[in-house]
Image 1 (cartoon, rainbow, N blue to C red):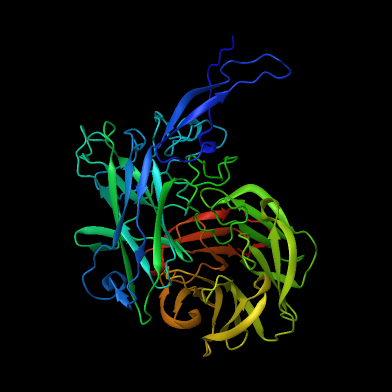
Image 2: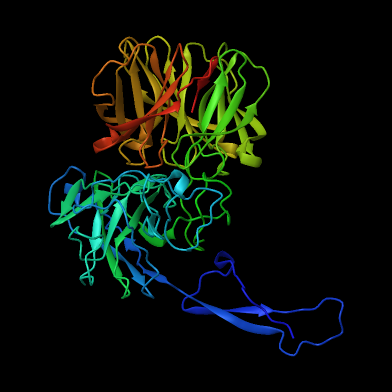
Amino acid sequence: MIRMTNLRANANLIGAHVTSADIVATVAIGDSSDTILYPQQTVASTVTGMRFNNSPVTLCGCVSHNASLVGGSGTPAFDGSIQVIEIFANSMRRRNIGITVDGPTPPLVYPQNVSGFAYPYETGFLPSPVAVSPPGYTLEPADSGARFVLSFSNVPAGVQIFLPVSVTEGILTQSGYPPNTGIYQPLIQLVEAQPNGFSGPAYTAIPSTATIGTTPVAQASRVETTAFATYEVVNVETAEADTFNIRFALAFNGSTPQSGTIVPLASLAPISTMGVAATNSEPVPRFVATNFTPPLIAGDFDNNGVPDRVWQNDTTGQATLHYAGYTGLDLQIWNWLNNSVIPTWRIVAVADFNGDGIPDLVWRDSVTREVTVHYYGGGGGAVQQGWKWLQSSPVPGWTVVAATDFNGDGVPDLVWQNDTTREVVVHYYGGTGGAVYQGWNWLQSTAVAGWHVVGAADFNRDVVPDLVWQNDTTGQVNVHYSGGPGGAVYQNWAPLNNNADAPTGWTIKAVSDVNGDGVPDLLWQNSATHQVTVNYYGGSGGASIIGWNWISQAGVPGWSVVH
């Protein structure tokens, strides 16, 4: 007789089912003519714990809709909704710590999903082990709530998605939870997260920026034509199955008719396609969605959802890649991108030119101003795959200062600035490997004495990159918003460092979304110590400093960060 006990199954390998599916164990005896009478036995069943209902939304073909949400006038209204339905009562896990009566107030930061420790639940986030938890704090099974991520694909440039910052269900819980907070309703909260629903801080609520009727709303983050938003379960009725109805609104106000169909999707978070979480820099794959693909993150070489840091030696031109973890800060893991000595060539941009999901390096000869793109892939995205010319003839007096997609065709374009007049142009690219010149346009057609462009990225989340300028003398920093045909029409500007002068010796070296909230951040480096910091941005137009952190507190003499 054979007795099977303590059987375990990997839920990630079972797949998703509409209702339920049986788990069958098969017994076989090798090298034996014996026959097993009942070799297959049903040992368990899986049941779908959560379901999402949603419908596509067709744009009106008009030039303005819910205009007051994006600076226009009128009375806004919701356009659709996504239902999150709990099939059995304990599939949603509520958070146990850090919540306040008003909801949006962020609590202390608690690390989570630390590698090397077992997490026994398949839904929701769990707290860190005792070694990295607050002193005197007793760990519980769900100290961070379950999360689900919403995605809106096919969102045209100029169209924004707004969602409630919190959603309640009509029923009251049997008792307020957490205790003595006055919260008696199931509640989910819009939180800052990467596009796959993962974040390092356990809970950072997103504040409202507008209202629809009496409902506070905030704008969804976006990467190119995909908008995304992550909700975390703050409170839930454990004895009953809950349903949350998340309404959303489309908003635009321009001169071009907006048409097409926006497709909303939803899934448990974090989303992972890796199947395993080898380090704490990777999301724990508690659920692998079959129809949900989070957008790629610019500058993310190892596809963990966080932009990585590229460094270059000031003398030799050698380049290294430092992989960033769940907080967006550097880990003690690095790789060579180029270990050859090429002293006259400098890395001027990092962008994915051939569309394979791995960033490529743009190099410029400091003497001739010729420009090449080197394609990358392989292990950790750090293996060179080949190269092509982007500019094969000398361009005296002009310098490439950024590479990003201005005309919305999915291929990065080169931003050039004149060394003397400081005029700025964009060269559009396409074709094989994204390396074929398609045309050009002015971004700044008049002289701008004393200012230089330090990068380009989408600060106001309208899917068009904006130019970041820094003053040569004072170090002041401004963002110039772009839009219109080819992304080449100046729209407006805003200060990025509150019109203050930069500290002596500090300059901007890169513009990159370090913390994964969809808003670009500024990386500063000290010319003497080579220390590197990041200033995080958010708020209206992405122009408000919301915090800072060290990228390299010790500094690396002789090396500069370029992304």
